[in-house]
Every structure is written in structure tokens, then in C-alpha cells.
Image 1 (spheres, rainbow, N blue to C red):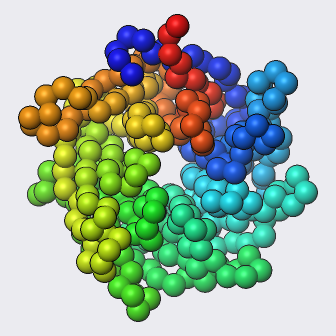
Image 2 (cartoon, rainbow, N blue to C red):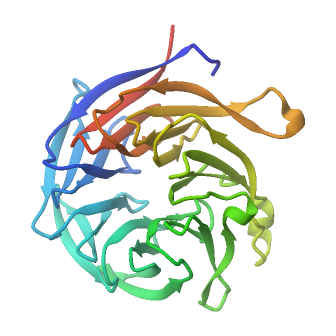
Length: 347
């Protein structure tokens, strides 16, 4: 992946939402030869839309609109690892669980407890735990019980402001949250069912100086990228081997900071399975970064692979790489659209 031999192709613009599109999620069980890719999007219009690619012509179509459940903005959505359940979190203070039953999506459970807007929802790798976070400054961990029942097993208090995002580690049951309080917190279970904050990444340890909007992991799970209102992306690293072999969590440390690439708030970041970082921001632009192999004397660094100005007409709220090894990326925006892109090699 050398500079200049990659291009970003706009495949399709998906229209249908009547308000800003906040977030999207690719169904991880789709995207195989006999199972076309499916994604969900959620919006300020209080609905969730399910989109599917038609194999014959490659075009995306809206297959379902999930409405009449949330009464306010739907801020976040996430598929369970098996792809059967979709969790949606809303400003109405609830998280809804949807099940695909014979092609129709039914709301099979509603998770209540947060005092106000639920900002993000995330499943752990095995699908046995769900995390939610809210403007009420708390992070809740829910255990998935038989019969689509969800039991809150822990309410995590530690953030001093609105919690913007929760994300489980890809290989371990360790939870990460980022907040308006400028920090990322790492939460772990102590073996007896009690969850605690194992580490806080703040400005004092090379962290962000303003709101942390999102975080993502590389495929191996030994690196994390965070993005912020301070206009930077930060790469963090840990020893995953050390993490798995003992109850003592190996700590995360700052590796490098990418600055000067976006000139407005960076709202979203995602790491592809082959190591490409995508970022989307309030400057309406997309940026792509890869690890740089030169200058290893100073340790690892990352370089700009590609940029796309005016990828959307308004703020970009979410960027997500497709499942499997495809180079498909989807982005959502305040302009009310979802765009499907392909990162292609110039031939």
C-alpha cells in the first residue's frame, strides 16, 4: 500500500433517512458469497434502516425500516457477533434489541435504566455481554440471558461527563469507554463478578485535551486508535499476550499522535482488518492512514495513505469498514445519507 496507488471509489449513496444519520453497523455474519452484505443505519428521524446489497447488480436497497419503537433520535446500533440480534440505543434513554425472524425485525427486548440519552451500545466478542453508555455519565454492563432477557450486572461510575462511546476489546472481555471528560477508561472484571476501572488514559499520560468521540482496535487487539475534539488521532499499544495470561491487565501506553489532518472535530475512526485506519470528521472529509515502515528508530509511526475532501455535504458522524477482508467502507453524515466506498488499488 504505497502512496498514490490507491483510490477511493464512491459506490453508492443510500438515501431514505429524513434527518442526520448518526451511526451504522455492518452485520458480521454477512458478506460471504451466498450471503450478501447487510448494514444497519440509525438516525435523528427515530428510525433504523436495514440495507442489503443485491448480488446481481451490486446495488444497495433498503430492506426494512424499524420504527415505532424509539421516541427520539437513535444514536447507535450494533449487531451481535452471530448477526441475529441488533441493538439500538436512543436519546429516549432506552436500548432496543431486535431479532430477525424470518426476514422481519421484531423488537424482542427493551433495556431501561439510564437516566437520559443512551449514546452507544456494544457487544462483546462472544455475544454474552452488552454494554451501554449515556449522558448520565454511567456505563452499564448487561448479561444476555435465555429468552432474550438482559440483566444489568454492573453500573460503572467513573466518568465525570457524558460518555460518548463504549467498545469491547476484540479478543477479551475488557471494556473501553470514551467521554466528554477527555478520557478513555478501561474496565475489567476481577474474577468475582465485580467490574472496576483498570486504567484511565487522560491528558496526563499523553491523552486527549478535549472530548474523545470514538475508539477502535486493530484486528490483533494490541493497538487502539482514539479520535477527539482536539483534532488529533492517537495510537495506543499494549501487550496482548500479557493481557491474556494473567488477571493483571497489561496497561496501554501512548504510541503516537496524528495531528494536522482534520481541521474540525474528528467524530469517528475505524481500523480495517488489514490495518488501514479510516477517520471521518466535521470537516466533511475522510482520511486513511497506514503504519509507516520508515524511520523505525523512533518507534512505529503512521502516515496518510489517502484523503477525500467533501466526502459528504455535512459533518461525517461514522465510518465503518465492512466485515471480512473486503475494502468496503460505509460513512454516515448530517446530510442524511450513507455512502458506500471501495478502497481500490489503481491498476
